[in-house]
Length: 194
View 1 (cartoon, helix red, strand yellow):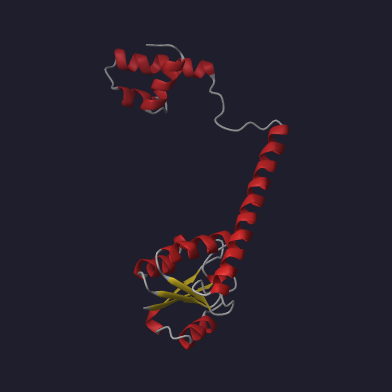
View 2 (cartoon, helix red, strand yellow):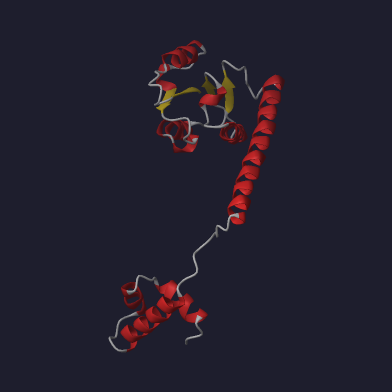
């Protein structure tokens, strides 16, 4: 079965008539075209039209798109999504860019895209690490803030009192001070209280 997919941006208020016409000219039945009008920043797996389409695709089916970038929000997303489809035995064909993983040239283009996607992933990781390093150099601390020892001790006494004197269970008693059962036991253990 041959399926088609179109995506237009909500920002530009585009319509997908050009994409639909190209898909129909490529032999995709009008009823087998799925669409999304969403921001390109959303991953393919979070779009309703894509999710509906993906649920119908079976081994041996062909997915036709006007341009390969209609599939994903970034090169990484496109390459990952296309690889998942190809691994499932679904043919993918892009009309404008000539990307067809069943051909030698199409596989070359896809491999080049994968190489660039990997490069993009590494650049993102480097930028994130540089930001973390710069923040640490400025004295920014990451993770949970250190709890106030006095408040923790008071909460431990309060919870213990509610359990011993009022007959509350651990969950209810811990909840009165804004803790979960696990938080209570973690602080109790750290304080060396039995």
